Image (cartoon, rainbow, N blue to C red):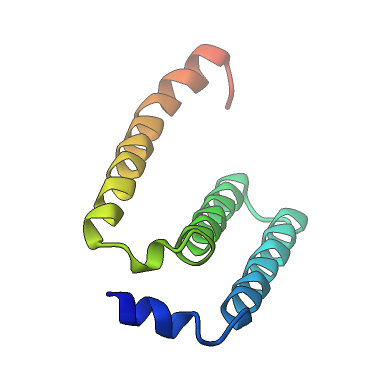
Length: 101
């Protein structure tokens, strides 16, 4: 496991610059999504997807979690899945109570 970690750092800061570039591209895409006239639900789903992708990039490269075991990925994704289910389970009730269409 240490060999893969050492090989990734042989390139110096190149990994960080490439990751930063992709984060910039995703941010520009988020701005583009907001400025276009698409249905609100589609816009929200796109923004959430792009934000999750950015979070994965940051965790994998800047926090060096790319080199961790797969069990760590399960620890992170399980609450995310449960939170998503809970969100979609509660949104209909919240919109009804708050009077949001």
